[in-house]
Image 1 (tube, protein in one colour):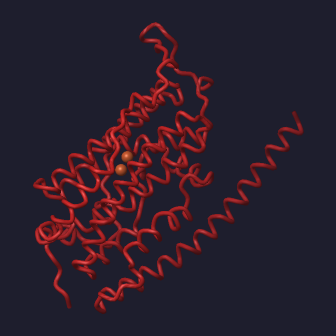
Image 2 (image 1 turned 135 degrees about the horizontal axis):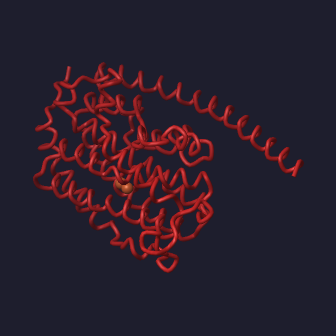
Image 3 (image 1 turned 30 degrees about the vertical axis):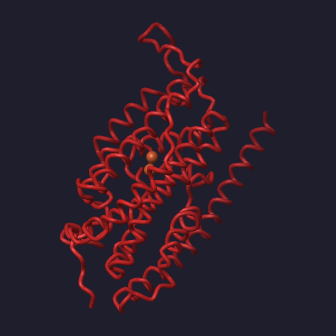
Length: 332
Ligand SMILES: [Fe+2]
Ligand SMILES: [Fe+2]
């Protein structure tokens, strides 16, 4: 059986790949400025400065768009949690350190621009938004702790190779946030919001490529070990918003209206990445990796069935709501 690499061995072996990918990222990344995406002349003072406080009628966003915007923003706001996770598992030195700093700075821009937009356009209640941010950031988010609670991995396993789990998690997570931002732009029904969210989604895509390339290189280096981490993450994936205020309600609304649902998760996030890593066609696994691959395949089959079930339920719920609206309209 192939020996597991230690965290230090992984970081040393993969450093040249990290360096190449940091260079690649810097050559592709576009400098952009949050202030260029905000319609500042729509801004007005709130009551504390002699103006008017927020009222629901001021928002031009639909209920679905508001739920998606808040979820996406709170996710971006929780950057300190993700920074902690990545910086604990990557080294501070060389290309690793450069990446952690650069990635964190880019992510921070996303929270800045979405908040500016929502406050200036009065898209959501700024008081409730601030309360939700306080609650969500105070609670923090720890993807690895959630993984441990699932009973799948132990603290000792993560202490040795947290890098593999982290890099697998962020690959899927960056792509998931890309899908979510892009589809949120679509439901906002405002070209200004759409342009801003497309800009963010383009950043998330570059982030995803960095992590996907790193995890892919780890898979080449230590196939069985990396596949075990990938399998743990795919089978226990939770969006980073899990646990935020109104998470269930907002998550259901987003799934129901095609911003982020199970089929998008499977077909636009999980499967393209696994395909890129060639997981189901590679021949460098030992019996240990083959077992994990079979388990992963069976899980994906179940997920496929869950998608069909979810869609059937969703279609029924949407039809019920449409009938209800018709009745209300007929009575009016
Ligand atoms: Fe982001
Ligand atoms: Fe990102």
